[in-house]
Image (cartoon, rainbow, N blue to C red; front, side, top):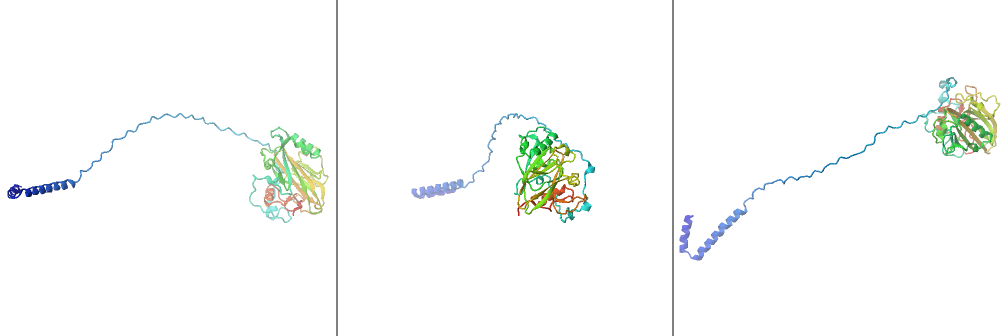
Length: 374
């Protein structure tokens, strides 16, 4: 450096002043530019990350909740419903001889074969006393409950009242005003036959949409017409527990009641036919034979059926005998008669009836159909 200065001084001594000034300016610019470049490209110092100060979250005071709880209550015990069922004498019940009768071989002995499918439903038994809708050639049934008033409250009526109501209704010419002070079910049922084998009396209130309960003291009144396409003479046979009465064109042609209560009714209709109360239909129920009836071809006649039961078990079955027809005999020696019907019975209804009916005592498929429907 010293050498450079000395050399410069020598140059300055022998150089013009403008040249010396120019050289000094350029030397200054050179060192200034060098310093600027060095300062500009120097890497910046690393940035240190400092976390922010913690944020203080204010705490909210919690309040204690007061919830009122109800004390648990015990369910009330349901009232027990008891039904008084008369004591049965097992010696009087006839059990079918399945080995000799043969379900598949036919139940009437006349060649008719009944095929049994699934067990019938006991929740839908209204087919035995009729259906909710009419098919046109059926009997309209009305249900009365003697133990209830017209408004539906219970009146505590007993068996003696039930029998006296039946007697008064029949003696007054089947006057329905006799029944007006008792409860009448709003719904009707339309039946094409009357065939209720031995079963609980609660079948009737259940069929008419009422509380079945014990099935005490009820009545059903059927009304309609019967007609046949040809001249025909026939008579009804009936097996009843409690009772059944039949009237054609205003004249009673049949009355039957449970054998142990028959004398309690003041209705003394009787048929002196020797076959009356001789043969059984439905276990221990004897059949009563009715009067002969003649229908002219195509001429309808009024038909009424009045029946009921006082509770326990009931059996209400109506069959017909056509004059001049030879019927096969059952084990009792009596005729296997066809059931009274105004239409061909459905397979379900046939199975339902046969389920509670002793075999070879009546026929559900043969016999006349009292209707002029094609």
